Length: 171
Image (cartoon, one colour):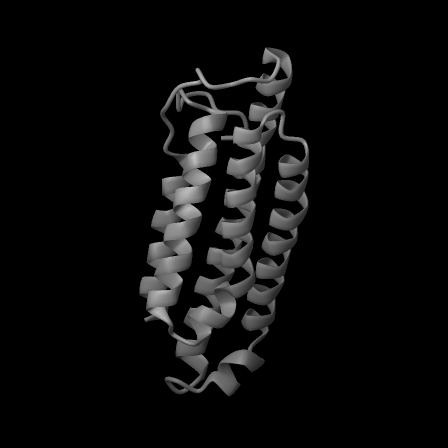
């Protein structure tokens, strides 16, 4: 179960990079909006990097748990040093989302940008703060719901930030 959840996580990470769309609805001054979009793209790249670290740490924990604990022995699994590393990566990921996406939301140059940043902030924060407990609990349906929401919200923000999908800052 855990391995398939991490596989889904890797696919979700790839989904954040997909771009497309147009810029015709922007109402902010072009320079402010352009700078904000570059920051949004870099923020998404930073989130993807921390998400990748979380996935890598989770894979290490999953491997250690399989090697050192009986299947389903969560008490044993949670005592492993790899579990601590995984939790640390998840905490860093969640803090990054809160800080950076909060700033992105606060600095949005127009209502559309603010709405997209808020939804990405909310979806990515929920995923980051609940991910470890969901994976440990083997809750595949909840995991997929969070992944789907994060993929959709992150993808929408990315399409707005870098509509061409090429040379996106941070990626």
